Image (cartoon, rainbow, N blue to C red; front, side, top):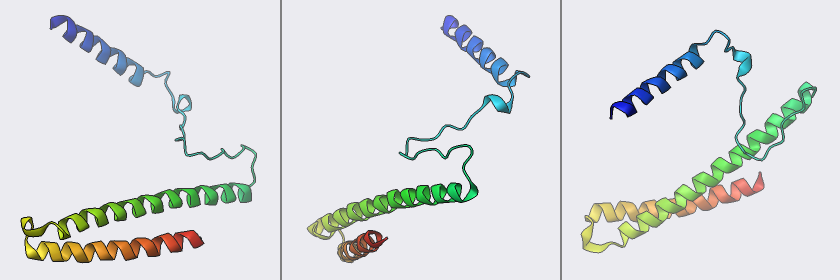
Length: 119
């Protein structure tokens, strides 16, 4: 146990020295992009090219978020149907609300899917 604590203390000290080191400047840091499948904008790109690139990236991210919403609505619809059809195990009011929620999720999910398909 003492050996572990000694190594841990040494690791913490090493980390502190690296983080507080005066030689470490912000130029040593860089932003790492996530793997979203987009191509980085060339350094010499014009402002309009950068704007087009950012707009395309924003559309891609919006599409991903819409797909996540559709998936969540589908999951809520399934869960609501299970509760609505759950019989006496669930209170009557909960079953009724779950049934309405399932219908709403189905119709709203279909609407979102159609609207997203147009864009």
